[in-house]
Image (cartoon, helix red, strand yellow):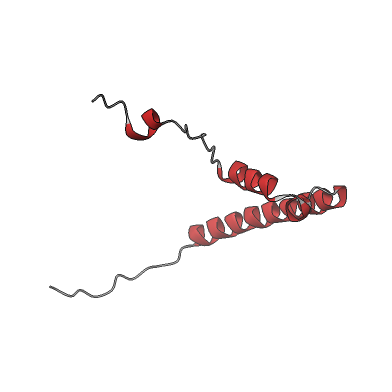
Amino acid sequence: MLRRKPTRLELKLDDIEEFESIRKDLETRKKQKEDVDVVGSSDGEGAIGLNSDPKSREQMINDRIGYKPQPKPNNRASQFGNFEF
């Protein structure tokens, strides 16, 4: 295997400006999210996951990740298929 010298990366002014703008956007989003969390916790919505029963906690997690469980049928035909003997 041939070795080559490392590629030199140069930092340009455009790159710095782009980084700063993205960082500012992330900071404003984080600040807005914190403001929403503060308002939500004062309404009592922030503590809903801590004090509720496990079923609603599981449902809240499923909603957050986008998982929609389908009920499983409990008959033999659905488990093993339709085999005829």
